[in-house]
Amino acid sequence: MNSPNFADLRRQHYNATVTLRRLVNDELVILRVRPDGGVPTYEAGQYTTLGLGYWEPRASGCDAEHLAEALKTKLAQRAYSISSPILDEHDRPLRVQELGELEFYVVLIRHAEDHAPALTPRLFGLEVGSRLFVGPHPKGRYTLAPVEPDDHVILLATGTGEAPHNAMLGELLARGHRGRILNVVSVRNECDLGYLPTQRRVESLWPNYRYMPITTREPHNVDPAHPEFAGKVRLQDFITSGRVAESLGQPFEPRTCHVFLCGNPAMVGIPKEEHGQRVYPQPTGVIELLERVGFHADRPGQPGNIHFEKYW
Image 1 (cartoon, rainbow, N blue to C red):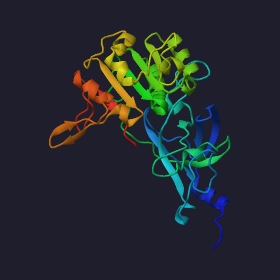
Image 2: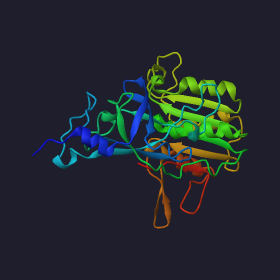
Image 3: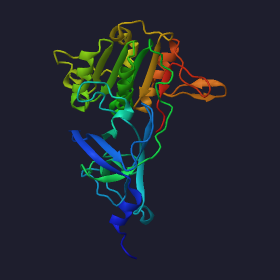
Image 4: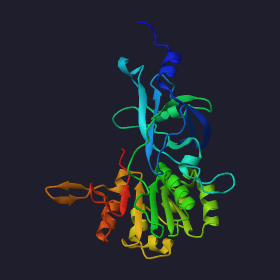
């Protein structure tokens, strides 16, 4: 059997080029890519697919991969929310269509329970000029469509779930949004805050915006002897403690607020309908906590004021 021609496979499958690679840390990278046919029309908050051939090399230190023969000429693909640099070089807010490229915020997955991670170990091998596949049609209903100019917007994310919120933030600022915007992101360590300098710059320029990163594995989270010991704070704790209203500087109530959730499914806590009853997953997620106090998550044909991403 003839060995596959990888150069031919790349020409056949790839349709975009990496234009920026910024390594945040060894397991976190910001990639910017330019599709061959130009950036398709999309809305802040939507996602598209990235893909690389199974023939491409993988980062070291990941689970060993044992490929079936049929996969060796196929693409490993995964959906990623489209991020944004938020501001341009003149500190003006960026709408997603103004960048001319697509930005992605990617965490390296080294280990998985059921199979070796396929795509992210390959994405971490990309450099400026590398080729890859990008889905031509971004999609998703996780957008700012329900938000009015005076509504308060609360963005809650874990890790790289911050990506669509970056795009949303740029859009809100460009619109001249009048309501308060609170952006809370939970990460393990401060070094996982890939957009921190930009977020602080935005805070300094827009008085109605606040960025609240929280960590779970810094010394002050895990060492009771630390002089500033705070324990492990999750987004659920941030809500139940009343810190959302405190940080927002306005009442946190369904009538005036929209909440956007992206990241760990256990944090989001999407309920199911069983025999006409709403059944929440355990442990308790943010949706259940908010619905207890009068918020309502989006349902088919019944838009609410809790919005969540659901591409996993």
